[in-house]
Length: 76
Image (cartoon, rainbow, N blue to C red):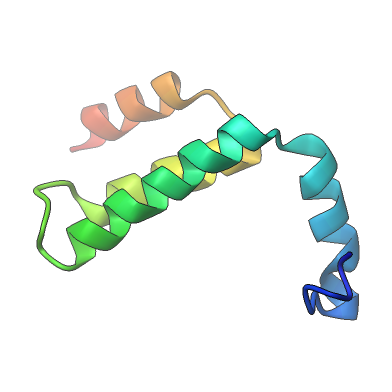
């Protein structure tokens, strides 16, 4: 499957690990988050694209987003 999707050889282990770790509902949520980031970058949303990107990456790593959001608000 990875070869048919042209995943580079040196990335196969990381992609395989992500596939087993991440569930489909979360992936759909991350895709929606990416759409929000895209709109923010284009000025179509009032969201801060850097904050949204940080939250997406935190979720991708499996960390608690509520704690991360509070840290972003505290540092703003």
